[in-house]
Structure formats: structure tokens, C-alpha cells
Amino acid sequence: MVSVAAVTAAGLGAAVFALNANAGTVDLAHQVLPAKDGWAASGTGTTGGSKADSAHVYTVSTRAQLVKALGSSTNSTAKIIQVKGVIDANTDDAGKKLTCSDYAAGTGYSQAAYVKAYDPATYGRSKLPSGTQETARAAAQAKQSKNIVFKVPANTTIVGVPGTKAGITGGSLQVKSVDNVIIRNLTFAATEDCFPQWDPTDGDTGNWNSAYDAVTLRGATHVWADHNTFTDAPSFDKANKTFYGREYQIHDGDLDITNGSDLVTVERNQFTNHDKTMLIGSSDTDSVGKLRVSIHHNVWKGIIQRAPLARIGQIHLYNNYFDTTALNGYAPLYSINSRAKAQVVAQNNAWTVPSGGKVAKLLSGDGTGSIAGSGNLVNGTTTDLVAAYNAASSKKLKTTVNWTPTLTAGIESSAKNLPTSLATTTGAGVLTN
Image (cartoon, rainbow, N blue to C red; front, side, top):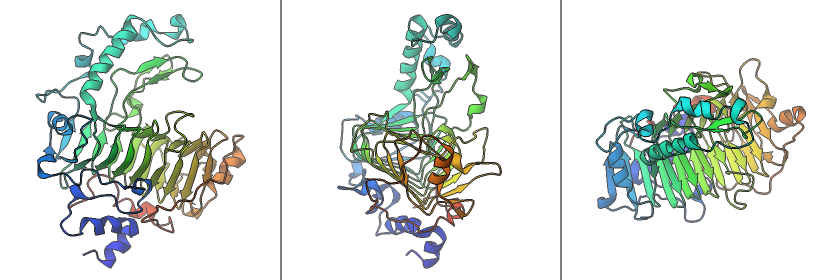
């Protein structure tokens, strides 16, 4: 049974999970998204691999076992993959550790040669790199991609085994053009690109761009990401090199939702020690009528930006906690960015802003996006975030949206207790059954 004390301590949202977890003999691996729990509950809902027969329930502890369990990305047979312990994606089929040098071997790629070949002082800034070293870089990156990108089929649940330090380090889960996927109770750490590409046309001074998100949704529908932890640890950005005056960025996104993905619920995760955290919409012309995402009861700490950056879609952010104190060199620029006519409702969220921090910097936009909502607290005080942002910016955020959230299971009417309650009810390792 779920006690009244448990409901009081963890909040109604946590109680929904507890009730689901203790209904009959349903274990963590077979749980489905509760009714009305965000956009992923729309229509057919999200059940993942809950209907898998015993032949399609796997427990994996190595990269090779994970690849085998996933099978073909086009096989939609329901399956449950239980991750026990930490899987290192940068290993071969025999479990031998692989390094960037191993991926570069035989391609002709050299970081020093690449940096020399495309120095803006001699190569210029008007075009992307091409030629011998760029071809070699792409080949080396393709070798790494083949090893660390795991393609998730439809009707799949991937879940960390309770009681173990379950997760994937150095890897990228790709949920592409499939429906009905659940990802729970996993720590995603150190997803790193050995071979970032230089783009001199990216911004005023160019940028190094990396290739892998810890979890990437591309054209995916009905996805539930719950109780996961995302972190760059142990390699923080402050250790990255600098070339051409720009950071050699080896990290991309934590959880990106792009290319017409739709009906996604992201809840009770911890996002920490990262720069570009969550992108919703791959461009300003991504799919109109899609990109519907609910983001609730998450913790964002030591995040520089994109919590999230939203384009086009209908996004509901409620009961999240944002700690904008700098952490391990990650100094926040903003939390929520609404652009390309995104329709964001930000409701009953809490922010901690350190001394000297500016409320006007918590939001961002391009002048076309909207952020509505109320009940948001900054350091415990009710604050109109949009008014503060608009007073300081020429690119005003609109304050009305064209939709009303209805899939709001577990919503709390006050953000007051979120900094405390979410500290013990979010991230990997919290779920126990």
C-alpha cells in the first residue's frame, strides 16, 4: 500500500508512480506511463515493451549484450531490456576498451593536422572544411558512431535494474522514426565525440560541433523518459581544449527532441553539468503540429542553456526545479528559450538564483515565441519571469498561447517545496521495485 505519509513526503506526482509500481505484481520493467501523464499519454498512450513475452525480456551488462538485445531497429516486437550495472559504449564486442586513437586508426585523421588545415587565418571563414583531413575526420567519426550509437526499436522499454548503478557511459540512444518507447532509471554519462567538426560559418566566430546526444529523439512518437540522470561527468567542459579561440566542444545534447518528434513526456530526471541540454525542434522550420512535449518534476543544476530551447511545438513545463548556481565551471546563460513560434506554458516551477543573478536572464527568445503560465517562484518569491525578460530585451516574448494543457497528472499547485522534494525523488537509482 501507499501510505498518506508517502504521499505527503514525495508529492502527488511521486504517489502516482508508487501506486503504479505497487498495483498487483507489476514490476518496474513492466510499468507503463500513467494516464494523463503529459503529452506521451495522449491517444494510445505509452506502454513500451510491457507486453513482451518471456523470450523478449533481456538483462544486459555489456555493450555487446545491449546491441544483441536491441536487435534490428525495424523489429517492432515488444521487448524489455534491463540494464544491470554500467555499460561502457566505447568497448568492442569482446569488452576491450576503445579510445579515440582506435577509431582514428587507419583513417589518416590527426587532430593536429586537422587544426592546421582549417585554420581560419589561412583557410578562411566562408566555407565548411573539405579535403583530405575532413574526409578522414568523417571516416573516424563514422567508426565511433557505429560503436556507440544504439538504435532503439518501437515498443521497447529500456530500464536500469533497481539496486544496481545502472547506466550507459559514452553512448547515445537513438530513437528514430519509431513509436512507443520507455527509458527509465538510467545514468547517461560522458557522451563524447572524439572528432568534432569545425564550422567557421556557425556564428560570428565559428564553432566546434559534436555529433552525439545521450538520448536523441528524431521523428519519434510516444516516448517516456523518466527518472534518468544526465551528466558530462567525469569530463567537464572546463577541461576542453581551445582552437581558433573557440572551445573544442566534445559534448552535444543531453536529451534532444527533433525532426517532428511528438507526444513526449520527460519527468523526474536530473540534468546536471552540461551546456546545450535539451533541444525541441531541429530548426525553425521543423514540423508544425508536432513537437508536443511535457516536461515536469525535473531538476536542472549546473546547466548553461536549453532547459529547454523550444521551437514550434506545444510545450508544458510544470513543477521543475532550476538551480542556476554555477557548478563545475558550468555558468548558466538562461533556462527556457522559446522561439520559432513555440507555445510554451511554464507553470509552478522554482528557480534558485544566486546573489548577483538576474531574473531577466532566466528566459530567452527570438521575438516570435510565447511563454504563458503562472505560479513560478524565484528564491521562494512569486515572479513574473516574462515581464522581467521583456523589460530588458528588444525581442519580446509573447504572453499568450494557442492551447490549454489538460494532460497534467501529478501537477502540484505550488512550487514552494520543489527544491526539497525533488532532491530525493528524481534521477536514476530512486526507483526500487
